[in-house]
Length: 157
Length: 157
DNA sequence: CAGAGATATTTCAAGCTTAAAATTTTTAGG
DNA sequence: CCTAAAAATTTTAAGCTTGAAATATCTCTG
Image (cartoon, rainbow over all chains, first blue to last red; front, side, top):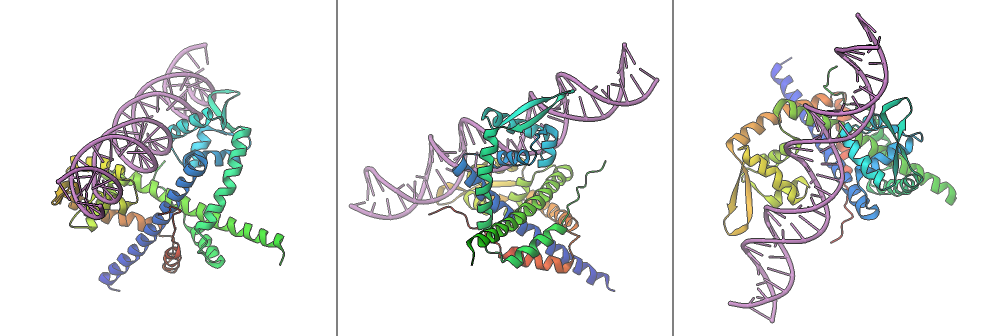
């Protein structure tokens, strides 16, 4: 086989992968912008706050700060600030962990639980309407394909 | 037909669309995080800066600030700060628009053009390697499906 | 040509984000 | 027991992001 031809093939291959990435990025940025806007206008909140509430809603027992930042794939320091603001709004509480004075568990308050449940329902409707151009078949194929994509970080250790 | 059954169908439909969104979001966040990390470590730069350079690279004549923020789908004020830092690094210049003293055109410098061209090549390789689990056939189907997705903002006017 | 309204951009305040440094507490080894 | 290393979290500095307000300039209409 020709090395020159193979190089051209690989170049086209790379370009096709780049195309996928650019489309993926465009769609997710547009959807994210739309969701941020609606959260702001309809619920006077932000996406990071919504994400924190969503994670806590799944874990009735609450989560440690470190578990929270791992689940959301953001830095520790990041979560500190967001939780601070949620606490002052009365949506979550921080309770000390018995037996480890370093750690804190964050939990939804009743108010936080109620507010999130309401927002989540509306949110699901937004998503469905944004993706309503996909046929049921397309949707199934898409879920399948996206499931195969696993991004591995380059991070060693 | 039964209204109850139809409601259940629609509910499942919505859930499937939500699944797509969550997978889309996860993949794009992971890829974005990986790209940010590599840009930081290998080129000591950031994704917003890379995005601005990419937009300017496509437009040899340069772009007005407003065109730049429209192309990147970010706010005007945002671009101001990023361009400021790129100017002080000597990668772009701002030239006044003759005939309109309000406007500014931003252009790559030779240094900016060279640096971006180099980074873009490496960047394409990163993307290809992150998506190398997709077969060529899967990749084609995925591009096709993603092309159909057009998010329409709710914004009136 | 004056003034109203439209345009291009910057400034501002607030919040998000990160990596790295600092703090506090726990755990393990000697 | 003592202390070095590990672990959980917060703080810090810098940059990104937004919507809204402020500036400056331009255009159009009367």
